Length: 85
Image (cartoon, rainbow, N blue to C red):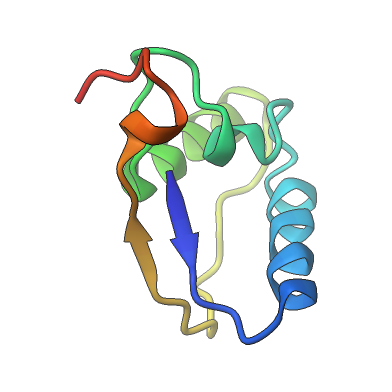
């Protein structure tokens, strides 16, 4: 599970919706909040999943972002007992 530090709930929600919209991945924000058992749900793993899916579906890659978002990994066992590190 990943957490980002946003000043308000609305900004947090907007970022979640933007993630789903920008990545275009069919799993959307479930890549973050409900990863499949055994799937790498770290920030790097999620980016890798999205990049691979976009490449496999003929979509362009990512541009460098100017966003400065602090991301921390939370204990995945709290959210998904089937997760294996």
